[in-house]
Amino acid sequence: MKKIILLLLAMCWLVACKTKEHTTSTTTVETLSYIQITSPKVYASKTVMVTIDDVHQFEAVVTRTSVKPKKGKKSFYPTVAGVHKVKITHNGLRLYEAHVVLKAGTKSSITLP
Image (tube, rainbow, N blue to C red; front, side, top):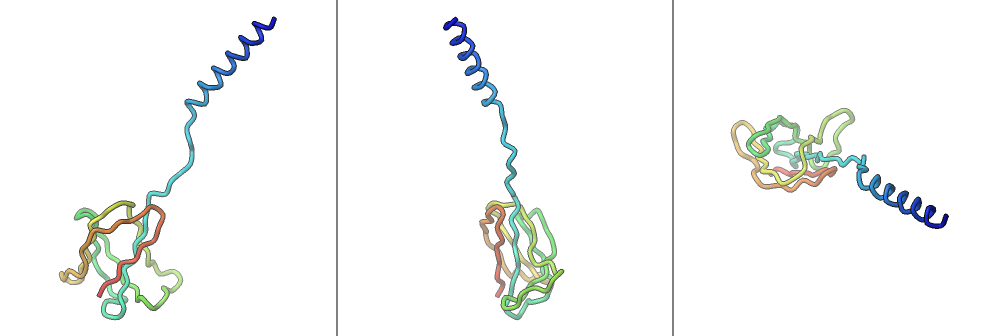
C-alpha cells in the first residue's frame, strides 16, 4: 500500500512539473516610445518633417518649451523603442540629426535651436 501511494505521489509530481513547463506568460510589454519636438521661440508652433531611420516620415508640430500644450493638441508622437537615427527638417533646412535612444513606454523630448 505504501509503494502505491508513493508511486501515485511521484506520478503527480512528474505531471505537475511537465504542465508548469509549458505555461506561457500573458503579460504585455509596451514597445512604443513617444517623442516630443520643442523649441524656445524660433520654430514654436511650426510644422517640421521628422524622419526616423531614413524610413519613417511624419509631420510634427513643434511645441514651445516654456508652455504646456493645450488640451486636445497632439504633442507626443509614438514610435518604436530602440536606437534610432532621427532627422528633423523645416522647409528643406536640416535642424536636427542624431542617434537617439528611446526606451519602451517613455516620453522623450528633442529640443530644437
